[in-house]
Image (cartoon, rainbow, N blue to C red; front, side, top):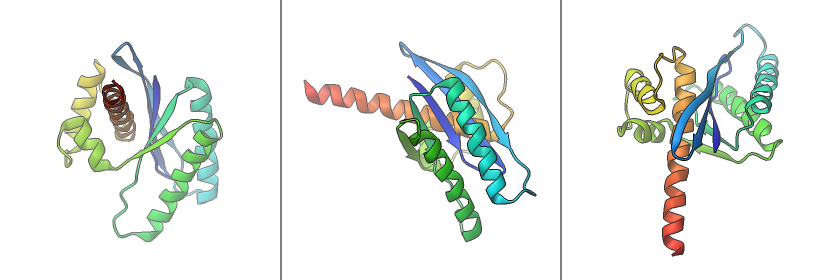
Length: 167
C-alpha cells in the first residue's frame, strides 16, 4: 500500500509518501511545496493544486491522509487552511482516492505514544520508524510523513480487527 500524507498550508504545504510491502515500510518521497505569501490566496491555491496533482500522478498513492489543521482563534487563518484542505480533497477525489483525516494529537499519539510530543520527538520517531539514515530537514515534510504513518498504522489495526471479527 502507498499512502500520501499531507500537512496542508497556504505557504508551506508538506507532503510525504510511504510504501508498505510485506510489513516493511519505507519513505518514497517527501518535501514541501512552497509558495510566496505575497501572492494572492487564489494564486497560491492554484499552484498548490497543480503541484499536488503532479505528486499524485508521479507516485500513484492508494490512499491520502490529511492532518486536520489546528488554527486556534484566528478565523482568517482557519478559512485559508480550509480552502487549502479543499484542494487536497479535490485532487484526491478527482482520482478516486480515499481520504482520511487525523487531528495533530492523534498523529502524535500514534507516532510517539504521547499526544503532546514536540517537533524533535516526532522527528526522531519518524527517522526510527522509516529507518532513515539522514534527517528530514523540512518540518512540514516530517508532519506529512507522520500523518501517512499514522494512517498506515490505523488501517493495519482496522484490518486485523476486521479479520478477527469475521472468523
